[in-house]
Image (cartoon, rainbow, N blue to C red; front, side):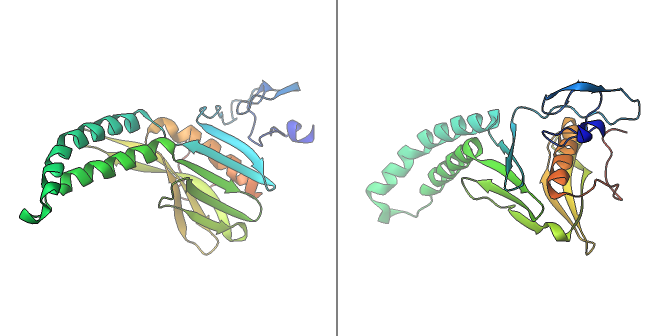
Length: 224
């Protein structure tokens, strides 16, 4: 009950706000926490995030699957259906012309592979008192990082600007500061509504690393 009295959930380690239920994992407590206007309010992470305990730490996993993956698959299949007859005609006598007819078909196949990867791939963050490790699997992808916990100063959420042809907006980025003064971007969000999710991820990771959350210059306070 000591952790509960200090306002931290003994199941997931996230700061509780008020009441008799953890706002993150839903664990129920007999002794409620009184509401406070100064408390930072965390909401439960979306169902796409899975939190498990392993190797004296925490593992956070989420899938890449989205509607865009299905759209890409449909587009790639249509593209392959259009370009395949041209490529098949070329393959009957490939010495009569250059390999240019195969390029559109190859692009369609690559796009189809990329779309399938977006549907089946996932990202996992492994954090404990020894190390922080992030990998994308089962298909390997760029962005895999590993840090020794002894070299980590702090993990924080920053504010980045994203844009497309029509508009621009702000999104969160999870960053890590090492004890030698360097900063590394670990994860990047895509929408402004993800700020509270990233703050929750930050606290869970810091809890697993056994590092006390502290304010960092340049960090964005999504609760301000």
